[in-house]
Length: 608
Image (cartoon, rainbow, N blue to C red):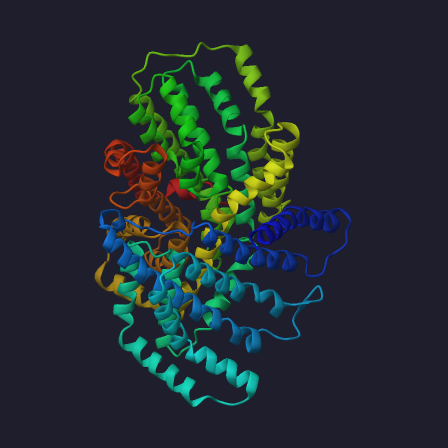
């Protein structure tokens, strides 16, 4: 079964990498239009995301926090594991059944895509939930909690089951209707305790996508029982053309990270600035930033390049602690530069307020400030006497050796910002270029090896896409419940100064960055923040950049910043030691954040 899924996911990845460029050529060069061409591609992405979600669960790579589990005894860990297992099974069961009212009644039976019913393509979503459910039961081997979870999942699914029974058989079930009414009443009365319990479970390792789905499902249950909206919103966000670029950039980033690109770029910057004090530091920060722009996840960059860069830094006289802290602190800088997935998702989430182009423009200067600040503090802490003599010959050799790697960001910026390619086409070009570079030109690995690396990147892409889908339902509920307007009224009633609001916003967002992953925070929190900031006359792009900078800072903020734990795992050091070493970097990033917050010029000067 796993081999079949792997073959299918590789086929879909190939289709996503090739078709956008072929369609562009036919349309722009050949002058012919392809009916539903983009719609077909984004539905391929939807199916890809569902199968990637299965692989992510099979590999136990779903994003979670799991902060407090480290301090628990083995018996308590077992108890917590049983509780989380039961919750996961209940949620996956409920979501599986919630998909079918959409298939039977919501999606038009006549809606066809290249001869394929859209209903049939939508089936990939319940198939994903079913596969995740089977994996959860089979691999956890906790019979009692699994049975309790299944029972709870069937009970809360009474509304969905009643809808299915009525549509298929044309008759109402009194028992199912009664069960749905009981669950609606219970969820209405206990909504807050349920939400708090799910958040607490998140801190003890419950996967974040389960937490988001559980909260959203419960919220819709007490608000009228429209739980079928949850999978429908997942479908809507995962068939957005901008979201389609995410798995492609992730694949390209992983191929680059596993090949020789990092070493080549490192050698280029070393040969150009290695004779300066901190030259190796400059190269390390720039390479880290470069790779995070493609992978979209600072943790992936730290894991992939951390050991290599640490070895290079310590080999050039930098202390081990300083090397590891520099790598950890610089891992998230790339989310402010194109083609950052964070900016793409932020733009899609707030599409009615901002343009993705403008967010890219607005984030460039703050991103450069943060990058330069990391370089400066790294150089100040560099007490080594070892220098690399400058040599034009070595610089020329390094430049020639990394020429094709240097062309990639140039092509991306030129193709996307010129408007010649859409974001999806740019992402497809990036994957094709990277494959040609790493397999044919550099020969870092064979086609078979590349396929293995693509499969290795799938859990990363799958984890992100499923979080995005899960968070979209909650974002929809909050907007539907008019929460942004209510929060705006409250803030305007008690806070009258724009500057006080900005200060409190920074505190709130850093906290959010600590406890939530980047993508669910963007989808859930940013639609709440944007209208409030706009009511104070703050430019939407300014607010967006502040939001993203806070998220990046939250990854490093003790005690539960995600990158702290990833660095601890990568470098095999206690978290407390990682925290102690990054404090100078954390302090200067806070200063840069405040500077950008209170001087809007940094985010608006490049806007048209």
